[in-house]
Every structure is written in C-alpha cells, then in structure tokens.
Image 1 (spheres, rainbow, N blue to C red):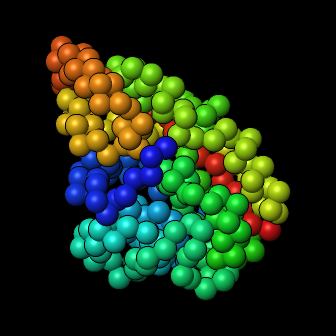
Image 2 (cartoon, one colour; image 1 turned 135 degrees about the horizontal axis):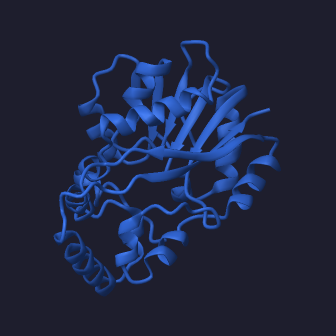
Length: 253
C-alpha cells in the first residue's frame, strides 16, 4: 500500500469521515469491557490513536489512556477535541512508544495494524509496554476472514480484492505474536450498529478517508463513486447496512 502521510493528507477530514455514532462507540466499549479485567482503573494505550475517536471514551470507561500517534496533525486535532483529564497524546508508533516498560494494562489498535511498517518490532514493543497478562485488542480485517461488510465496495472495480490486499491473513498475524510468546484469548466479530443512512455514508466516503482509496486508480475511483451515487440515489434515506467487524485479542505472557 502507498504509505499515507497523514500530515499532508486526510488529517483535515479524518474526524468527519470516520466519525462514530454514540451507539457505535458504546457497542465497541461494551465489547472491550468483556475482554478486559473487571478492576478499575486500567491504564490503557490507544496505539495509532489518530484524531482520538476512541481515546476519551476509553478513559471514561476504564481509566487513564495514552494515545500514541505518529502524525503531528492528527494529534493536534485529537488534543483540540478532547479535554478529558485522563487522556494524553504522545508522538510515537507501534514500533517505538515513548512510555515506560510494563506501564499499561491493555492496548487498543483499531484499524492501525495494517499501517505498521515493521511488524516484528511492533510485536516486541507491545510486549514491552504491557504488564504481564496485559491484553492487546487488535481490531483489524484479515485477508482470509473478511466479514460481509463494506457494502459500498461492491460498486468499485476490484473493490473487495483491493480491500483484502491491505490486510494479512489471520494465521500470519497470530503466528507473529505467538512465536514471540503471546497467546490468543479470543477471536470473533463485533456487530457495529448502522452509521445512519446510505446518503450519510456517501457524504463521509466522499472525504476519502479509508485506506482502501489509496490503492485505486483515479479511473477506478471515478467509476466507483459514479456507480455508488447512482445506487444510493434510488433511496438515500435507507439505513446503511450493519457491519460485523473482526476483533482479535492477545495476551502478553
């Protein structure tokens, strides 16, 4: 995938393009709560925190959270939007986090794993920053376990093929962690509520804040949006389909 420089593109529109409804956010927080220890507070890391769409909610639900994000512009937006006293943002990436060893009870990586350039190094770094029995909540797609979501992709030439090419197969991700001493605690799907109407979704997609768009040719993008707009024009007020999303949970030994 062409590496996206979020300091020069997408940062202005990312928060709008990838916004979650309160219902969607609460569905994810409930799912995470079922995978984390019951005690509170928990110290968390939001790795690849972007514009902070999860960080404040994690702090409200579980305890203090450090958002780790390499993009200066994305961090600036996150800091401007969040006034939660339990949230801080730092410059860093999954491969190199400026936090003490063994300082976190859990880490969330929400659709950021496919951006990691040096995955073996990230596996080691995540093990360093988590306490023994710390959990990694890895929300990612996997090329061999992609649920029937992303309904809009069917309108783009090679849509599902291009999207799958962003992600590793599940067994490859699991092997990278288990070979370094981690263990899998769960794998399943979380049903994310509808994001609104199909017309709402089209407006967000036009902002092109999905990584998949970086892999399409200009011709494919033009053709895809033309087909998508024609399909939605018939009933723009229809609810957007509900998406199941894959979530892998790993534990540091």
